[in-house]
Image (cartoon, one colour):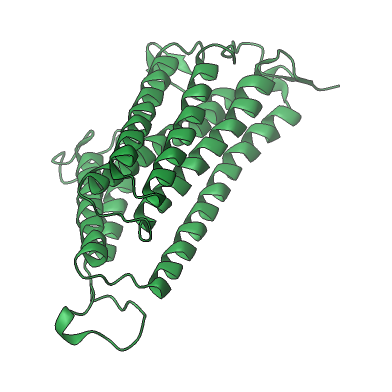
Amino acid sequence: MSHDNHSKPNHPFHLVDPSPWPLVASLAAGVLAMGTVLWMHDESLFGGLLSGVKLPLVGLLGVLFVMWMWWRDVIKEAVVQKAHSPVAKIGLRYGMVLFIASEVMFFVAFFWAYFGAAFYPTEATGFVWPPQAIHPFDPFAVPFIMTLILLLSGTTVTWAHHALLEGKNKEAVKALAITVGLGVLFSCFQVYEYTHAHFGWNDGELDGRDIYSSTFFMATGFHGLHVIIGTIFLAVCLVRTIKGHFTPKSHFGFEAAAWYWHFVDVVWLFLFTAIYWWGSHGAVIAAH
């Protein structure tokens, strides 16, 4: 939090008050991770009191609660307390850039696993990639539609940004609403795609024990999670735009969401090219 209006500091830096949210967020994330692992191994805690999906659900609700409260405090600092000075905004920009850089390396790991298996196929895959038993998606069917949806959403979020810069708040609201709708539509198509996958399923349940299914669902699944997070991020910005929180000279909250959304777009283009298109051609790599 910032100092109140009666005791404004004589410097441009934003010194926050002690906050419980970093600690609570760590605890909630720990419960979510531990609960998910126990759930996957069919284990329970406290004599079965916390079994099945109960523990990860508690962790997830805790994470969502922290997100709500922490974002509420940040918005209060920006809109009510006017604590985000030009110098403070530089720090916010650096923080968002570093966060996106960490996300880039997160996805590099999945691409590394995918290309490692593709360029060095083993006996388990029949010395070819994709493996002999795999029937990959047609890249120019549902995946291509999903690509068009994300590219279109990138243009609408840019439209919203230019509208904010020009002070056209109603136009920005319209463009943001379309972007959020496109994000939801993309997620719906991904659910459809997963339910129609001809690999990675065993007796109606997702089972990614082969390397192709594992890398495919990990890479595209985590991207799908990022689309959902980005959609929520933009939905918050939509509400804030409707309330008039953003001005042509002060709208970093929206800019951060737009950066994140463009990052999601770029990652999908790599996924589409590498996994859907390049990886769909039978026997792409054959070991000699």
